[in-house]
Image 1: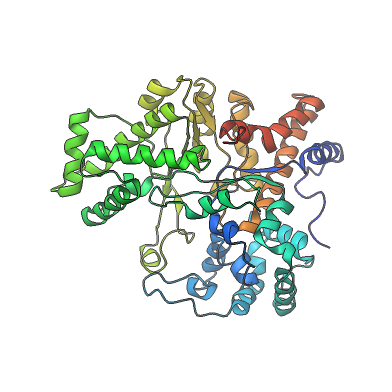
Image 2 (image 1 turned 45 degrees about the vertical axis):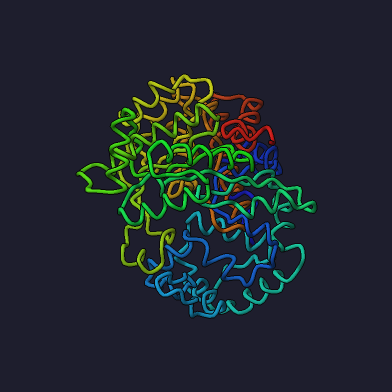
Length: 474
């Protein structure tokens, strides 16, 4: 049986035909992955994936989150307890059986669309998962994983990946990226992305001092003063760019940005490092540093990504045991117009500056994001992200945005995944959904077929290259 070849296309026959033809025009275009969380070591080491659970379940918090919602313990899904450092107890086959047992939980979700695509395309599994066939499907996947064509680098080519961006701390000296650059047998393009959040969110004097000391070590610049701290961050940005980076990423709760004077922020920096701190110091520093990150991007050309509005590590007990990125991060109401006013007033028309704004708050589509993107040259709009990278939610985003801002300010699609084999599945769902959206516009005579074909190709390929400045390889 397998995934239906016309899944996600409109049910009306005429529109379905248009969507299918649009999709066929873009289905095989190379994949541009400008924002994701796959570890570059996966490709640098190019080792065989260990087992089906380690590949398809444990690293994908979209999957583990829904299983946990059914009462499955995270440790039973292979999520590592960072408090004890002990390896997870369950056997991989047990984890796979849990996925199969709770397969009905995934009905009508985007996670099911992705998993069905992966299972059919990579492993030839076209029947729904079930408890009865759990061991059979596990063995079938495990047998495939032993084949050379299932190694990470072979899959990179098979997926049609043209560029893959990772997300990296400034404290990381990027040895995997360096190894890939030096490897004469590797010709793929994997680039780092500069993610300085932990160096901007000044929570806890001891912890923050430890991080800034590590920044001093990796940059070889003294961070004892605010000026040294800024120089160290600028130096790390230069290193990231030397290894191919074209973007930064900022995932703070708010995007409020307001600059302070040099003397004010120097005093604030000293208080944050040495104490005693005053109420609001951490928020004021973050706000100033977002403006500084914009200033640096205007200077060096790195595209500034903003991913606000997520309450991270909501389950504090689970965070203490398992660390971040376990699926316990949830949306909150988000604003852009007022918080970004000073930043865009200063840099919104700057020729060297570009900012890509993402949201998980649907209420700001037509009220804030679309109007601002239809005015400021520097502001592009990121893909429907996280909880909104599902078919119906993506359609709502495009409908609300394009009526005001058009298509030219859309940054394409980002897969935002740690689960390597889900990358082509996620892009396929997005391309199918976008072609269905465009088919309806053709049916309403708001676009003609040639325009729709061009817009579909932009979304799939040209727009992310342009938005993230990935078109010229360094």
